Image (cartoon, rainbow, N blue to C red; front, side, top):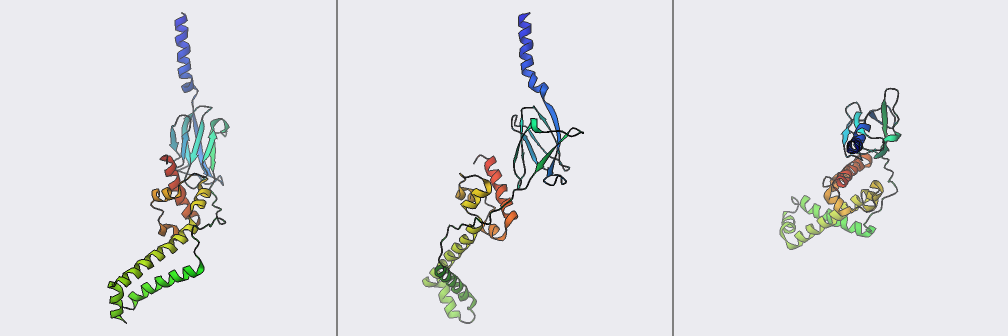
Length: 231
């Protein structure tokens, strides 16, 4: 009899978490509480199980009262919500409100380059001269051939390419540098050079041709992948 009682107690302990689970039915909306958000990830941190909101922002997920939900979507603040705090409405639905990340980085424009004005003028002159040699090929073909094939011409073109890249790097650093990345992600330990190599879509051209939300949305998209892969 005692053995039977012990078995019943053990079985009750094993199945009680399962029996206490209940299905959360909810909807994910934007900060205005009017626009629904599809394709938002909702993960049960305790069990690792998760789901994604559908086209109408709705989701369903089994949870226990002591579980915590992680809700994330690129460009929005990642939420950590204890299930106990979710209050269903009259229909039994819970509402999860997502808020956009506000990129207030206008004050952070630190450049890693300290190019003096006269240095910039000299570099720009070398770049202009290297391009003018090619443009003036019709007017002065002999000079153009000399600049094309001579050692001096090759060295000038090589120097112009180096200077051009330095000026590009300066512009890139004004829009995305280690300080901006740390402010954006809140990650003080992120390795900026490794992150740039990992996020190969963040080319110099992409950074220079995009601004504000469009640029930093792409950065955060890469950052979430970076963290998900345990970098």
